[in-house]
Image (cartoon, rainbow, N blue to C red):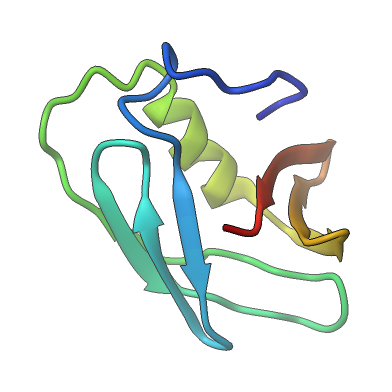
Length: 97
């Protein structure tokens, strides 16, 4: 995330995203999230509107994770990994699991 490896100290559990062609659901490592996906051509992806639970957690990086989702504008998939990026470059990667 933002060029740094995420550890268990950063989140209660590791963040997860499950996507279909038009929406997604997952976890911030503490709170459930869900919302719509928008694709504007190959390699373009946005999470325009999503909701998140608001229970208090010990997920230090939860706010950063949510902000990176909000600013996502692109993606790529290589070697069973999903890479998300924004206007500044690579922001997050997820392994299939």
